[in-house]
Structure formats: C-alpha cells, structure tokens
Image (cartoon, rainbow, N blue to C red):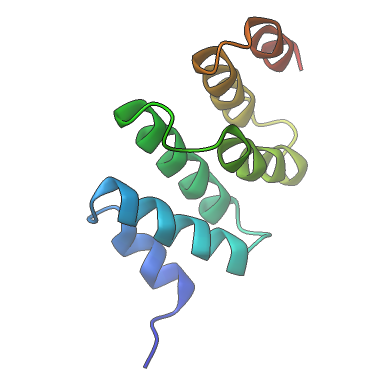
Length: 101
C-alpha cells in the first residue's frame, strides 16, 4: 500500500537531493494547505539548486514559497527564501522587493 503523503514527506529528508525534491514536491501538491509540505518543497528545491546550479527552474522554488506566503503572510521565512532564490538567479531587484514585502 502507498504511504500517506506526510509519511513520504518525512522520509524525504533521508533521500538523495533529487529524490528528496521529487518527494517533497509530490507531497506539497497533495497537501496544498500544509505549511510543512510547502516549506519542505521550497527548501528541497533551494537545496537542490544550490547543490547543482541550473537544475531547478526558478518557478519550482517560488511556487511553494508563494503558497506559504498566502497561508501565513506574517511569516518572514518564505520572503527571505524567495529573496535568496531570486538573488541566486541574478534578480537583485526582485530579491530586494521580496525582502521589503
């Protein structure tokens, strides 16, 4: 039988980066209202992109961060993560705007 999404998400941290990203993205898609799942997907995407620049489309990083921002607008973490992703992608103005949000 298939494991619940939250169980797979918890196990994703023990997987190699590419597999962890796929597991976290799948869980985030299954649980769009879960702060934990959206954070895990964004974090896995950022870590994968830092390990292998150019391996993760920017939108794959920003999408779960935008969901996090919508779910918990007072939480500064997703805005800081967005700024980091945009800065790494070379969008300095976008990174600064994310920090001002």
